[in-house]
Amino acid sequence: MPTSRPDRAFAVFGGTFDPIHLAHVACAQYVLTHCAVREVQLMPCHLPAHRASPGVSAKHRAAMVQIAIEHIQGVSLQPLELNKHSPSYTVDSLRLLREQYPRGGLLFVMGMDSLAYFKQWHQWQSILQLAHLVVCQRPGSTAEDGDCPVLLQQFGTNSLQDLHLLDSGKIMLLDNPPLDLSATRVRALLEKNQQSSELNQLIPAEVLQYIKTERLYSGI
Image 1: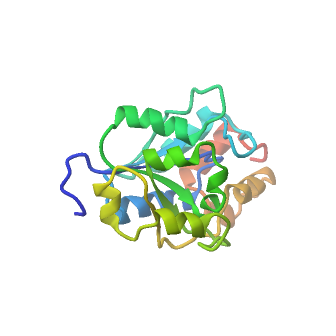
Image 2: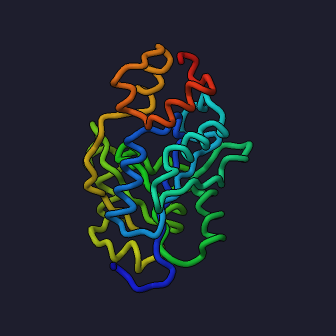
């Protein structure tokens, strides 16, 4: 183990999850295993601050997350943002989480594409005062893009111990296999009513069944 602290680090993976797909699940499992955290919490946002509002309600998106992770030990749903009626800023959510978990490493999971414009995030410096960033590889994005080089020079670490012995302030790049998969692609297939083998390879079967039952994304 990287640390003997009783307040072992945990991770939070925020996103719209519109809908959750297998790349989300794979990233959560990779963080759980390779970062040696006690838990990975998936946190669907109600109204994202940096992109268009989802077409499916927070209630349905949270239900799909719960279905997708139901049988994965160590991965759970974090409902913190679901009842908000204002844009979901990461810094506000992390402050609330810090009130619940004042000690121990807190890892916020993001993709390399998000790190590239991280300095445009609301109060980005405060985010690093509250948590570490662990960054998943994404197809088409590299550590040379946008803000990445400067941020990694100042805050980067290759030491897993830093994420456990320090409460916040570090950025670590992960070596997860990047999956060429996006929620945009999934929605496009669903809206065309394409119940193909491709769709079955993109989202968990139970989530697809939920989408059909609830008639989400208009196609199925």
